[in-house]
Length: 57
Image (tube, rainbow, N blue to C red; front, side, top):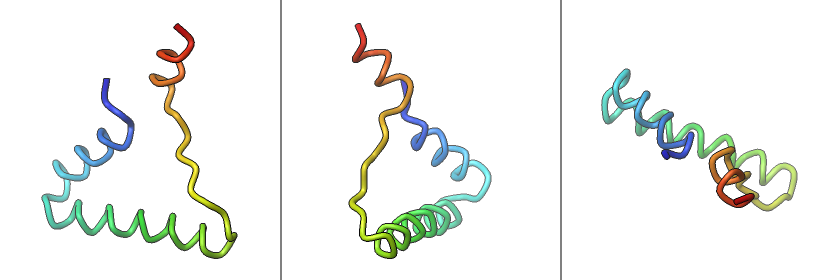
């Protein structure tokens, strides 16, 4: 199964094209980095529901 981030990127590619999706992805990454810098936290990627199900089996 695909990761939610992969599905999001595919939607952006379909709607916005390659350049638009690249800008949207860069903006998203910048916002994440800004929050981490302001809060002095480290990035912790949360497992998606598919990974949690696989881990429980």
